[in-house]
Length: 504
Image (spheres, rainbow, N blue to C red):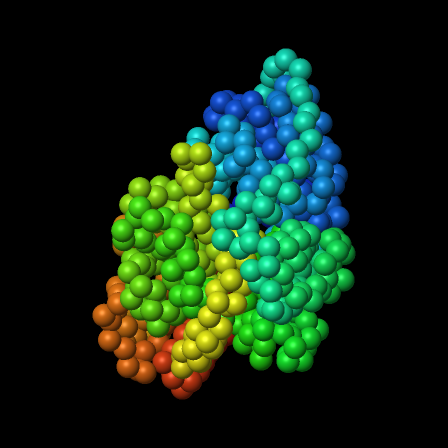
């Protein structure tokens, strides 16, 4: 069934070149989702929206027609929407499922879908009620199609103003609170510009907007702040000396890169050091809050977070899987999570319920507030981060999955042969779908963990959203240790027909 493009079903969501998802196939997919929503989840209401991609309008138009014809109540947001506004809209209707048509930071020619169950429960591979994305894939293969039940309804929804207001309130940022703060905001022609501009302007910040207008042609380059060519012009503006910091967003606005005036990125784990006291204020009834950090998080950052009274736990990559873990463990005091890919998560309480969501506007405002209140702390954090040496995540494409798997196994074997330890499972026994390799470091790090400079950490994984791609990140106590680890990886993967180094 190769013509069905089953490769679009990724570990976290759906992603594929738009030309491969013809309207016939997207119709088949919509019927499979409708069947899953109704028969597996008991849902009669669905929220539909799109990001800035050129292909999004036709998929949204089609989805509105199909779900309505099948008898669903359709809550449609025809305007361009960020992923976080989509999640907020779903939170306002906790009895509804939701589909967002978009492809995050992928190239402009790609499309995809983010799918949630009622209560904003994430749907992914092995994640979500009723079998999650695996069930939708099976129904898609079968050509499942639910019966029409009654006449459907269409409602247009727009919670934009509420989202901005509630995000400002959640971050405890009032009009004028950010006065004097000068920020470069680059949206890479994606979906998040309007909400950010309105909130930051209301808060009194002096902003320099870049690539503000949503444009699915993505004229500045791939809508991915990791791609240097896409953000290079804005980095030059930031380095002019007139600004306090920069913020860079991806295509659907759920990624937040924080950059100092000299162009250095402050990693999410280090940024979390400044944010946890403010996060604690949101959960006054939790005496010992916990946060998740991904396996690439810098050990120095973990120690500093732990010293503020937080439990810090390593978690696998994957937006849906992280949100599922946050929601599942809310009663155990888990309140937030960060990924080094610049994604931030929160267990948001609303009307007696807990919603594990992403709200990049909240985190951008909270970061700006922290920077405005204590710029010296950020200077210290940047200096602390600078005492370690990081090769930010990069990857190689391999001709096939067998060679990719062999390369990952060979890299792990090479490090273990040199005395390193390998970790494949989280503390609760769940698979990380990745490998954490450490030398000179324990796997459990807390506030009292002693560190010398003689340590190195390597995280490696097979990409779940891009074909044939394996990824690595290296962090170390010295430049020599970082360089030696990078060199060993590069030398090992060459034996398995690795392509050119890929960053993105």
